[in-house]
Image (cartoon, rainbow, N blue to C red; front, side, top):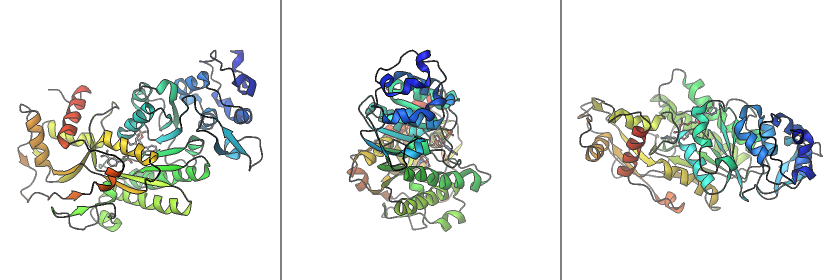
Length: 419
Ligand SMILES: NC(=O)c1ccc[n+]([C@@H]2O[C@H](COP(=O)([O-])OP(=O)(O)OC[C@H]3O[C@@H](n4cnc5c(N)ncnc54)[C@H](OP(=O)(O)O)[C@@H]3O)[C@@H](O)[C@H]2O)c1
């Protein structure tokens, strides 16, 4: 335990990793010792990483950031690490133990983000994952069980509505995947529940990125909700593409609060990125389905659960659909491919709920499924969404039938349905 004193972060000790302090709550002290960390050649330190995973609440995020490795020769603004050095000093941080880059995923416990974290770990990245409650096993257990998590996943507590919450987390990261944003429809106070976390939260994260000298690219999880809600007709001849932008007034008028939150957030993000010279790419997924990694039910998987769980009728609605693994893959491609830019619509197909029911009946002939539509109006028409840009990321979309089967099987496995 003596080796756990602050001095073990000094350069000579740092060169010989200490394995004796796994249970020592010393992370809080790390921030004040960053001067020695920052000038030392970085050597993998299993103790530090173990502490990050095992005692997240004892670790201040600035402490974690300073202890965390970064990509080769990152430029880190010394002041933000509270290093007792000149403001302009450029500190070199060596590679992570895996020799790979360090990236941040916000809202990491969420449905899409969990898959992004999984794929990033599979590809050898070191991942700094933010969650609101690092103490809640339903939010973190599935993440720490992922392959590679023990070695390369670090958990941080951060909230979109707390200014500066992400400052130290993004420090030293090469890329930031900003996925955190509330996604649900049953809201009482749209401003407080959806609009503020989406818009102020996005700017909060981008502000942290702007302060960091290490962040090279931000991939923002936007939505087709920020693309296709403009009031322009959507009929079988129409092809929606990345040039479409949802209209704020239209969303307000129809009380499409979630769509409004994504539209305002993406709009604000583009303005901020332009003004602050941030290289940002947005990924705009359709309704995301496919297997769940997290134990809690998310909004888009609930859409399918509602259909297979004894509903009497199906909605008269045509939605856009895409598989969660394709969405996660697209995020990483949008970060890795240097020439990626602008927005990427991710839609495998559009389908009316009558079509969804038809496919599900084909897959599960004995399952009681709704026979009738919720109203007698003509079915909402289908339309097309261009796949051209998504293809440039190398995305080959999973067919809707496969995605539906994966969703139902996952809902069964997680005991949301029983048949
Ligand atoms: N699923 C879809 O069909 C779909 C389609 C297009 C775009 N998107 C976008 O994809 C992203 C992820 O959505 P998802 O489907 O994966 O939903 P999800 O499972 O509900 O994940 C949302 C995440 O946002 C986090 N979050 C919410 N409010 C926060 C706050 N104030 N501070 C910090 N974190 C906060 C949540 O954290 P907690 O775990 O702490 O609650 C959660 O991790 C969102 O930006 C969403 O708009 C989703």
